[in-house]
Every structure is written in structure tokens, then in C-alpha cells.
Length: 112
Length: 113
Image 1 (cartoon, each protein chain N blue to C red):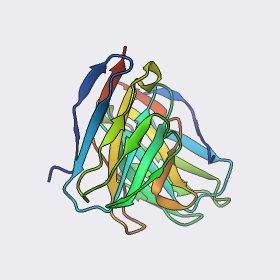
Image 2 (image 1 turned 180 degrees about the vertical axis):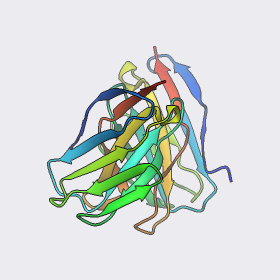
Image 3 (image 1 turned 120 degrees about the horizontal axis):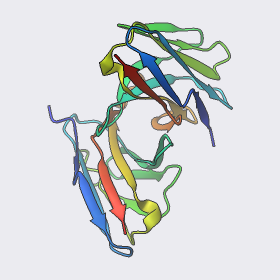
């Protein structure tokens, strides 16, 4: 099946720093999704990307759909304590929007 | 709006017991899915449904059954619980439209002893 590899697995940063994480796939995706999961809650969609090369922002978050369609990047600028959580990339299985495959997640810790 | 509601939030079972995890959504979404999340792993798809009366298997369907008799509800049944099914289970729903996101519930934490 399709696999998504995320890196890094975890990050410890200071408040105010910028963060970058990425996600790569062994196969082509037509959609890339970035989710955040807070402790004890379900994932919440941050950014959705639908076109190769697309660069989309949501506040301090910016995500890019790689030109090869096999990777995507998420950047967080000027991190704050509430950015703590696990960030997942996801994409549709076999191009079907009703089925998602998820990366293994990047756990972000922000220190004051 | 309640969104996606999962019950119970926590459950402990003994090996061999059966149980149904409930999921309900009030957004009239056609698509619904069940995922499990294990430590150090992303969510993995168990079963999904694209509408009432239609279900299909995901990546890890063994040991689970689903049904979709109404648009609102999508229960997940464990037929004979095994320790390997200890996990956090998430239900999600989505509009049929391609560019609409999946909405997740807050999860059910299930432990099998």
C-alpha cells in the first residue's frame, strides 16, 4: 500500500523559532493534507493542497505540494506554546477522498 | 453543532469479549470512516462507508465489522476482542465533495486485557 514517511519524528524548539517538517511518499498523490492532533483529541485539518507546486498559508502555517507530487512540506513560523502537538500529513488512498493514509507524525514540543 | 460524536471515550475489555463503538455525526455527511491509532504510528483505516447501506474495507479490517443503516451512524463492532486491538479509535465523516475535509471525533481509548 501507499506509505507516507514523515520527518523529523520529533522536534524540541524554543518559542519564537520557525519549524519545518516534511512528508514523502513512494507513490504520487493528487492531494496532500496536513493535520494537527492535540492530546486527547482527534486530528484537525490545518491545510489542504490540491495542485502540484501549490503553496498555501493559514496564519503562521505554510504548506507546499511538491512538484513531483511525492512530497509535501509544512512550515510554522514564530512558534508559540499552543503549537505543541502531533502533526500528520495525509493523502487519499488510490485517489479516493473517502480513504486517507497518514504519515507517522511529527511530535512538536515548544519550550518557553 | 456536535460534529462527530464517539462513545464511549474509554473502555476496558477482557480478551474474547465483544463490543460496539458508536459514532454519530449531525452534519449529513455521506462519507464516514473508522481509523485506529497506535503509538508511534499514524492513523490506519479500518473500514469506511460512502453512504447508507454501503461499506468497504480499509487497510486493517480484520477483527472488525461495520454497518451503515443510516446516514448519521456508523458503529464499529469488535467481534472477539484481542490484546492487539488495544488502541485509540477515531471516527471521521466527510461531505461527498472532493475538496471538503474529514472531520474527526475525539476518539475512543480501548484497552483489551
